[in-house]
Image (cartoon, rainbow, N blue to C red):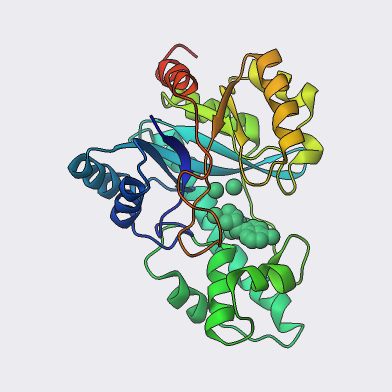
Length: 279
Ligand code: AMP
Ligand code: ZN
Ligand code: FE
Ligand code: FE
């Protein structure tokens, strides 16, 4: 079984629609793919319908923006109930924060003579439910300021750069609890990727396991071979399930093919058996 537990669609900052993503997953010979858009479940229905027709399993997931000890930490949530009111309230608040930060990002760009309007960003975002920095990047590409999304991040939008504004988000432990209460499981996304490495050490992983975290995404493009070995050992020590995923964004992020990183079947089964279980 080929299982990729981390992919994005155009419902957030990927470029394939949910059904195009499922078609691409089938073409990549995946058996299971998780649709994990940022802070929204809006793509789930289309994706699961498309997957059914392709003989593919779509795991309904969310990549939730959270804060832990002052750092941005992403939490992958698998199989939570989309009808859970606390979960949807939390996600709606994050999406509202994503919208209100856009003018701050544009003001930061304007101080450097780069003038982009909110309408430009909205046009770049299309009908995405969750607005993100990549859409501002697309607006910069459309305006001819940069050639690619990646250049936009490298020059203007990366953490701490003029076009980056912080995003209000719930504390990580609150997000984990909310996902568990909605019958889902929480897995730390790329814990040693950009930003979050500083705050997610061995002690933090053990503490989070005690607070209801179920797993850690180990096999991810942001992690070196050494990182993966070390993270795997920490996960084992804390009883956390190890996962892997491509973090596919369509043409939005070059070089991340569906299935480039995968999750072991036994780990997938272990996660699934934790979902819906006792808190
Ligand atoms: P946001 O959640 O709106 O702050 O946007 C974060 C998203 O932008 C991530 O999920 C990545 O897809 C992308 N991203 C963040 N930092 C970078 C970077 N330095 N280079 C390329 N893409 C990035
Ligand atoms: Zn993204
Ligand atoms: Fe992420
Ligand atoms: Fe992601």
